[in-house]
Image (cartoon, rainbow, N blue to C red):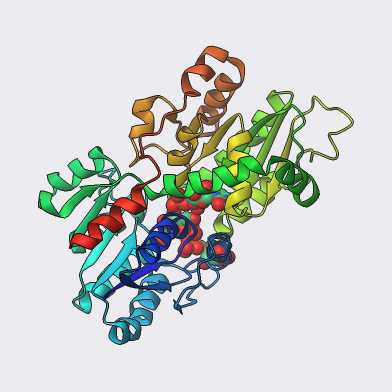
Length: 387
Ligand code: UD1
Ligand code: UDP
């Protein structure tokens, strides 16, 4: 029996690798081992719980305000004894985090073949996003098997002289995860309405719900100042708006968000006397199921996230991306995603247009899913049976 070792460490990797772990185990012909680096601790554990994943190894590397040196060196050294002990036939990594790159490098050092899930995304600008563009590029150089989510991603790899017989178009496993959870969430709507009211004082009272997330390193500093000021502007300029923002745990995000938005705005309870008044709710990072519920209920999304650019179009939700470039152009081509940068005026103008111009909104609010049919993990497992 071949041993497949899956290595991941952050929230998005876990969401996107969970369907692969589950399918590999279902296949019954692999020895499946999971090592988490826990580059994220709480946000990773949230995902492990919902998909009922029990890692075989947990490096538990996260430290407050860790830097790229910390993550890379801890992952590399932490994986050494595991690779020695398990002697896997294949290591699977996902995407573009520093866990991804360091795990691929560790596998290469131990002369283990590497499969890269979500291969071939590119902006061609090594500083944007930082450090993800270089992480995925370097992982692509190391990898032996490339699972590209779309034809565009495959073409990027071909342009880098990766042999075509080593590349497969599989769809993105995020759609597998989304479909799995969205089905469940839709059947439990009353539970989630009650959950948000009780746990987060968020009610679905007819105000337009604007869902916000953000965490990109290149937006730290000025970018987050601008993003927060834009959210404040939007709440002040519009009636009937409810901005719901689950705030990433990175201290570089928490600090400006709490400073700028924490004190100055109405909460839902203080604004309830005037139901037309806009308000902002700052929430902790949400478990995947309630987050998918919010995604399905929101009017549109403001984000700099990668994964949300893939999920929201599948649910027919317009996405304003607070970045200048994206490695996921398929949403732009489909017309559901727009790049608005991280400048206060541009963010406010684009969001106001969506709030006030129904034609513009309708044009973006078409369900478009360029990322697969929810069977990406199954495809990957079928391929692994043949190599
Ligand atoms: C990381 C990835 C990024 C990915 C993002 C998804 C790198 C360099 N960055 O960015 O590619 O898009 O995750 O969210 O690989 N923290 C906690 N608890 C958690 C998670 C984070 O407290 O569960 C705090 C810690 O102080 C930690 C800090 O956030 O040191 C930064 O975490 P880190 O993984 O280095 O960077 P992210 O911004 O989360
Ligand atoms: N997500 C979540 N809870 C939240 C915010 C996001 O479960 O409070 C999910 C989201 O649905 C997506 C993933 O986390 O699947 C995206 O993670 P993030 O934006 O942190 O990373 P990126 O995709 O940019 O690497």
